[in-house]
Amino acid sequence: AAYACPEGAWSPARSIHIDECVCQPGYYGLNGQACTVCPSGYSCEGGWQQPVECLANTHAAPGSSVCSACSGNSTSGLGALTCTCAEGDFDSSYFGKFSSGTCWRNGCEDI
Image 1 (cartoon, helix red, strand yellow):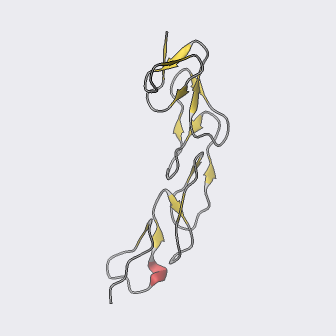
Image 2 (cartoon, rainbow, N blue to C red):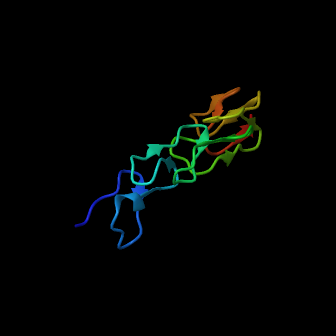
Image 3 (cartoon, rainbow, N blue to C red):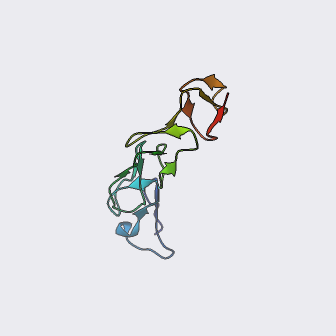
């Protein structure tokens, strides 16, 4: 009989045991059990590996499989969800917020 893996997991074709379900990148958990979404500020390569905290000057949203580098003119501390613009810069992707705005995707530009 066919069965479904837990949410966030997959199994190879012709798998016959629930233990063959492995958490996908962006999740973590034991094979065949519930997978947990990777928390913000961490990366999860999938499988049973525990989340890895993002280094300074990188960031990750919940469910990330990798930490992304902060864009130019922005920085972050360890385990960051976002990067912060340098003073005097703004984030063009976050409603043009001025001075120490949060850089979500497009980095910062001089004003």
